[in-house]
Length: 188
Image 1 (cartoon, rainbow, N blue to C red):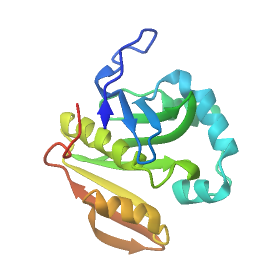
Image 2 (image 1 turned 120 degrees about the vertical axis):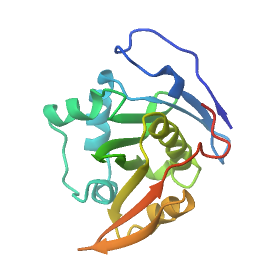
Image 3 (image 1 turned 45 degrees about the vertical axis):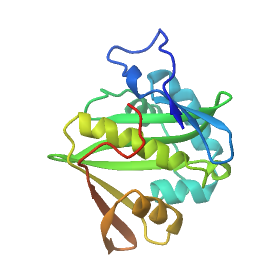
Image 4 (image 1 turned 120 degrees about the horizontal axis):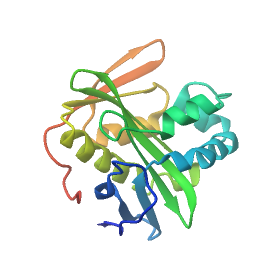
């Protein structure tokens, strides 16, 4: 179940309130999803430094990946048009992040990272729903996702979300999803 959150102040110009959500997960816990803001940089830095090496490796293809100040600014200072990111929280704790970045005309690369203890609860699916709505409203025609070919968990999520046409090169899989309509059951 997805319920929009109430708007609040102190956010960057162009902040897209319409993408805030409250999502009830399969285990009954509630996650709050909202667009990423510049003020999330310290939390993102903390979460990246505290993440287990497998999560970092599966998401960034690099287990020793660290975020410097320039990279943190890039990841949290968004135009909400061509570059769009959302984060999920539970009781103030960051539990997931998802985004899309331009990858060509009408094409955006999409990615999601969910803390291990929050996986298999429907959170990644809910976040993909929000990204798809935002992508459609911004004229994106296709999403592509790149992942390590041995990451079967994200492969299952992506296939369930309608991604296909898998190609693998040097251990990296690529799948594509043609966007065409709002995901079933997804609220605006």
